[in-house]
Amino acid sequence: MSNTMLQNVVEVCQELGLSTPNAVASSSDQLLVQIMALMNRTGVELMKGYPWQALQLEHRFYTTVVSDTGDTTSGSAVVTNITDTSSLSTNFMVSGTGIPDDTFILSVDSATQVTLSAQASAAGTGTALTFTQVLYTLPSDFDRIESGTEWDKSSSWQLLGPNDPKEWQYQKSGYISSGPRVRFRLQGDRFSVFPAPSTGLRYGFEYVSQNWCTDSSGTGQAKFAADTDLSLIPDELLVLGTKAKFNLAKGFDATSTIMEYKTAVRNAQANDKGSADINLGRSKAKFLIDSTNLPDTGYGA
Image (cartoon, rainbow, N blue to C red; front, side, top):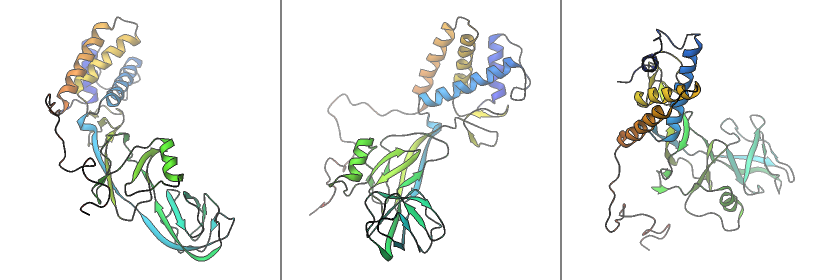
């Protein structure tokens, strides 16, 4: 079981030959304030430096498509007389007669009106419009994505990407840009997909959480805030890392404490989770069927 933050600070103080506290988070003692800050810095450093299994989580969401009608005016970006805008936002792409490609909702103006990011090229009354969500909010504790884990689980296809900005604009703007596979990128702290997906598809990916510790009830958080908080990263690393940072901050010789800390980090990472076997002979395919032997379309034709 993990130590509390107070227990870890007490251990740091004991090993440094300092007076041991009865409380830390509420203390005004500048030495304890510094040790707590250094321990939080160590926790963030460890979270950023390695995908600890305790911090690896999965995220799932469904794509959203809204079909509606509206009135357009040639040369105007305003669409009026929409039946219901309550489920719309600037995360939606818009398509329909007279709506240019790669057009988004710029603002939701009222219960029946939106302003688009491009002007309509034709006027229409009761024009059929499709509003497709292509930008999805990342988890609140998101730090970084685990590359290669992005999947369209409804279609059993791996999402392609992440695209760089040049590829992304080519996909959205070129004459030959779309295909049966969906591309993605992280953009503006959101998960962006293209081409616009069908409704009700289930997407998902794995990510590393920034919440490397929890409160006493198990609620994740990005830093220690109370004496009873618990770490999801090995306590030994927090103690050794804090000691090394304390010696550096005070101008002491930190050579031995840094070496001890780095050795402990390497050992903890090696023991954190299982590793795949390394085959020194001829390589074997990991999957019976994948993109190397199955075409995007026309399988079995």
